Length: 77
Image 1 (cartoon, rainbow, N blue to C red):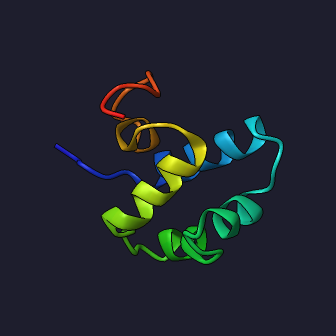
Image 2 (image 1 turned 45 degrees about the horizontal axis):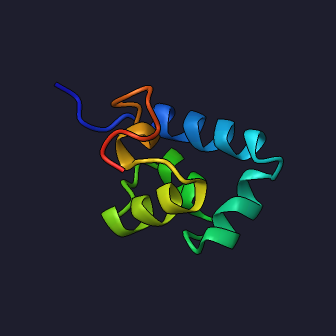
């Protein structure tokens, strides 16, 4: 079982940014997660739980939703 899929995380951050009418970079900087998060993901680095919490809180979704473990953004929020 794969626990982490970077492509799903990148896609969800991208979709949430689009939904919130902001760029991915602006969302990551404004949230405090850091503008290099996507580049680091593409290099194979796994973000810390703290960064995932920051991004999830910024977009108002759960970490499970962010990681693609559920389609309901409110689950485990």
